[in-house]
Length: 165
Image 1 (cartoon, rainbow, N blue to C red):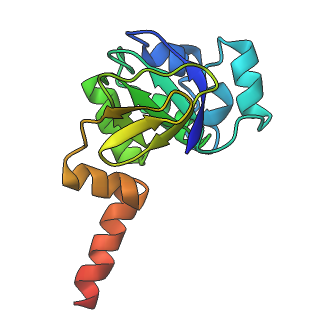
Image 2 (spheres, rainbow, N blue to C red):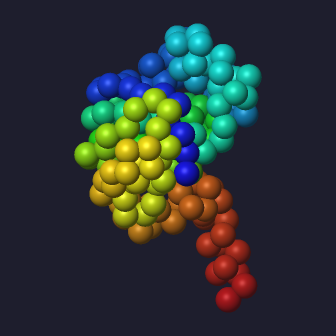
C-alpha cells in the first residue's frame, strides 16, 4: 500500500520528470537528486527523505512522453516510487521495465493527493474511497524483469540458473 504523494495531468514529459539540463548526470546513484527538479518543494521533499519509499505518483495519459532519456525512470526508481498512470509513453515504459521501476497502467484510476492505494497485479484499490480499478498488466516476461529489479539483475538470475542446471 502506498500514499499518493504527487498527482499529475496528461502528457508529462521526461523533461518534467528529469530536466534536460541535468543530462550529464547518468549514474543511478546520482540521478534521484534531480527528480522533478523544477518543482522545488516536491524535489526538496524527495531529496530530504520526507517521501517514503513505496509512495505513489498518479498521472493521466501518456506519462513519460518526449525524449528517450533513461534518467527519467532512474530518478523515480531512486526514490522507490511507484507510478500509476492511465497510460505510459512507449519508450518510457520500456526504460522503466529495463530499470525495474514499478509502473501500473490503470486506465480508469481515480485518486487524489493523500489517498491510500493498494496496488495489486489485477487492480488498484483506492482504500480512501473504497473504489477498485482494473489494471492492464505487463506481459509476463516484462513483469519478471521488473520483479527482478531490472534487466541486468534478471539476466544475471537467468545465467546463474542456467549454469546451475
